Image (cartoon, rainbow, N blue to C red; front, side, top):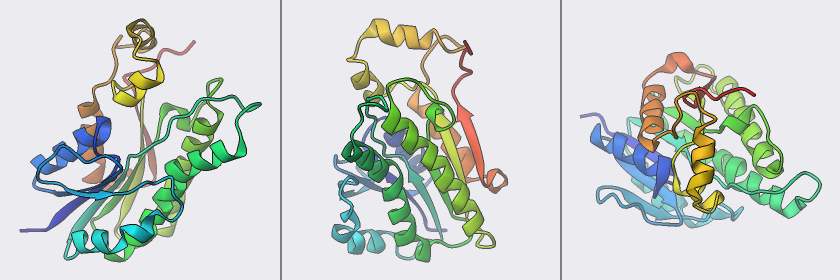
Length: 235
């Protein structure tokens, strides 16, 4: 049997956990990189703090050992940091932290794993609706998620001829712990958010996991930005 491995960041909850379960069901070995352990017995957990610019130093050997012999690696950059703050008030350190977690850590992980990735592998970035638009009061997050799209497009060009494909999947409002924490778990706010979607509901994490599964198996989408948002109402 082909040894297929999913390496995912932030796989302990939300979209990450749903994705880990989706790939495990399809026979993939799962390697999760996050601060919190993944509640999936079959997965390999490697604890990391992506906000630390030197985070790869403490996990390099364990990660390379976990992917050794893989014939296909699907790398999903899912971990993210959602910060508020307008452009007028966001500090340089806050922007740097957002860029480190959302963008720089992905580059570092790419460079660590690419020598182990054979043709047929893929690098998938989890962006956001805010990867190609903006809202007030989210300067650091908007900036970082725009940069994720840039990193994906650079990946596509720099990996030409390698047989490795890439895409950026941009979820809309998804019912995750991160979203609920961001709005103070206020159901009225969540209902209002759902009212801004043409389907009138939040996205389930499993729906984004299904989209990531499609992208992993579909090199035709190489270099693409896919918005998975149930159709947002334009105002």
